[in-house]
Amino acid sequence: MKRRAARRADQGRTVRPMLATLIDAPFDDVAWVFETKWDGFRVIARTGGGVALLFSRNGKRVTGDYPRIAAALGKIRQRAVLDGELVALDKRGRSRFQLLQQARLTGAGLRYYAFDLLFLNGRDLRRWPLVERKSLLKRILPKGGPIRFSRHIKKSGIRLFRAARRRGLEGVVAKREQGRYVSGRRTREWLKIKTGLRQEAVIVGFTRPRRTRKHFGALVLALRSRNAWQYAGHTGTGFDAATLKALHRRLQALTTQRGPLREKIANEQSISWVRPKLVCEVKFTEWTDEGRMRHPVFVGLRSDKPARQVVAEHGRRLSLRARGR
Image (cartoon, rainbow, N blue to C red):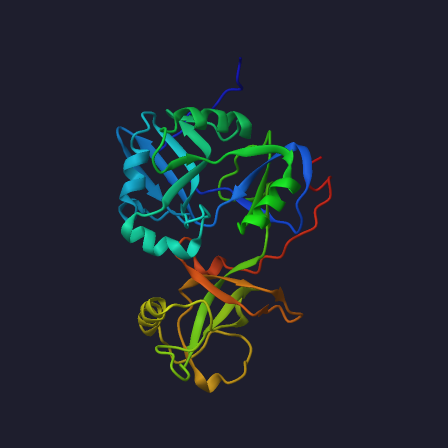
């Protein structure tokens, strides 16, 4: 079968991943395929010559942090650039972002779910249809071990979403079957539908501990809005003792006299301000009218996104026309 010409490109450069747009409800559509939304750490992998290099979403090399995954990907004989998610699985086989830090140290439960193939032996495949890229991807992946092919189903997004919700998974990603890969952009060719509300946020301060808690009481969270930091809420839950200690140590190194928020908030006298460098992920119940998260719970730190890119994500309603029909 004749394929449209694929441009030859330098695989040595860092490839910025394609990003999905958040929408508020699942859908069925014959022109789309649907995958599990993995609750992990986005990783671009470059293979060839018996070795593999791993890069985070913002281009940081993380090969040394995950040697077992790098070794397994090194078994791919072809020179290739893959996109996928590094996850840690719990005892029920569910990906859990909270487990990644411990899994990084022990290697237990780590998996790399590959879901796209961007380059193969110097050929740029990003203009190829998604289903053709995934077909090639499946052929080159090693069998067994921690490297997995991220399977998809056609048309039935609502069924997959309901199954994800029953299992307690993060959600579903919808992708246009004939879609191209657009590096470094958030497009409507990929859509994500979450089973619960999750949001990245930047830590801008912490409060004093109360009662028997050590280290700190709650984190003060902010989001970027109109080139300024907007208060987004406090979170004082979701921490274990080890996380409290380790996070407090990192926060102390970032303390500053003045807070970065553009508005005044209650009880500022009890807050130790920090420079807005650390990005975390939280889950929460709803957005308030003031643009704050209600009852946010700490999930974990993220090192794959610059703080200044952290903005509020609100699910959009998309019509068939907006989905490209």
